[in-house]
Length: 127
Image 1: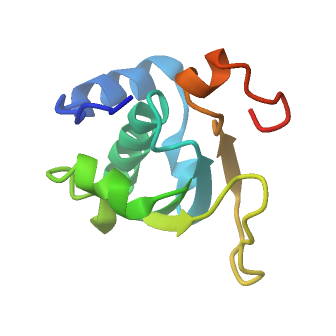
Image 2 (image 1 turned 180 degrees about the horizontal axis):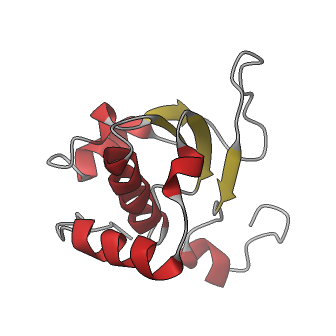
């Protein structure tokens, strides 16, 4: 399955969500967040939301995304300028190594196999 580019400006949606939730986004200032599964169907929405939060914090939030294929993802989202807002780590969630120098404050784990693999009786541990 090929994902279509996410061409909807979600900045006002994220602003409303922050306002309604009462979350103080300043708690993210100066922090590092690692997102697994950030290039998938649901992950791209979470990623775009985090980028909007980062903008509201004047770029004082580091967003790292684990992906199996950075170039493939960026090619499928050419107009999003994601490389300017996100640090990509290439690897598999099952065995990637994060540098000991990197301190992660928040982890959002969304990585899983894609839907076609899931419905083709993919091994439960691999999922």
